[in-house]
Amino acid sequence: MSKKIIYFPPPDKSVTLRALVLSSLCKNKTTIEKPLLCDDTTSTINTLKRMGCKLTFRKNSLTLEGVGFYGFKKNLSINVGESALLLRLILPIIVMQKSSYTIYGKKTILRRNFIDTLKPFTKIGAKIKHNNYYLPFKVYPSNIYNHIFKLKTHSAQVKSSFLILSLYGKNIWVLDTDKTRDHTENLIKYLGGNIINKNGFIKAEGVLSSKDIKIYGDISSASVIIATAIASNCEILVKDCFVNPRRIGFLKMLQKMGALIKFKNKRYYMFEEVADIEIKANLKNLKPINIENITDMIDEVVIACVLLSYIKGKSVIKNLSKISNKESNRKNKIIELLKDLGSLSYCNDNTIEICGGNVKKINYINSDSDHRIAMVGGFLKVINNPSIKISNFKCVSKTYPNFWNDIEMIFGVKI
Figure 1 (tube, rainbow, N blue to C red):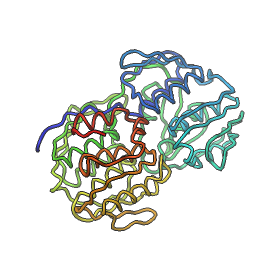
Figure 2: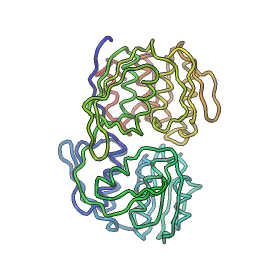
Figure 3: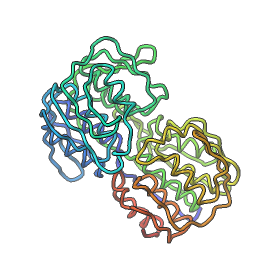
Figure 4: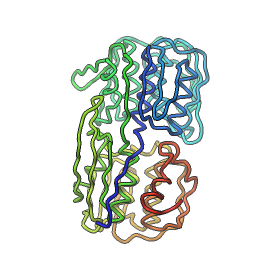
């Protein structure tokens, strides 16, 4: 190994946003230590302020004074920015306020289809006007049915939306078909609620109570730095990171390929696992891999595919239709990247075959304003060509505002 990198990843976006919204349902003050401050957080904070919550900032923390389940301001227009997670977390709250709301957003969220969320909401009585399931939405006062409603979903965000709705006393049960990330369940339990499980279907119940929250590192953001370290022949120690078992598919992939990974200083907080992650790997010794399900690495698929371009042999990744409705059509963006790198062997609607080990130099990446694509551009700037031009590279501010500073500080390559 040429050097050892000690790296502190940015705080977890998924947990930060859930912590903010769930804290708004409490009636007292919640202090959130080390929240992620990014574009999606700003959209969430501005939305909650507009809905009546009070927020104050101190160094490395913010305090939110919630309004309870029914204390939100009514008859508002709400801008969710580019955050699909924020939209899905506040939709059940808005539906239960018995008021009219307009929800709109900007940029990448305008090309995202929300049929997976809106269709089940309308089935249970929500009155939502939409443009063929695209924003903007108009939410009207609704009478949500209270008979048993069972929803099957493979989306953690949709699951979270209906768990919050069940907190309002609705008899709604969700079957998480793919065992997606369970941050919402863990936070509900941490704040005093209950998660009831019957034959795999879950619902939430109870009143939430304020409790201080600390946010640890985001494994999804860390994945690009990890991949870049491996490709640079560096050992890396990722400090103070959430390692939820349903979020570490990228690390499991690396282990199966031959990387040595140790979880050190493991502890539990808010029903979540936290650890330091030590990773040692030699790019030349890593093996190609077949991946059947990307659920536990949904945010890391793009960097995984690009890294596999550098691994000699054929790798296969399936289940890719899941990432077609993100900030961009990431499946198509992966195909575009792999073609440019000369490593695409085969693709169809759901599967990509990568023939790695003979990568071409590339000069340009169209990020399509997708932060995950732009961040992969950082990997390629270090490993492939320091002169690569990346369109709208600043879009990383959606989740990782300091990304380019970290790339320069760790690897010495400037944007």
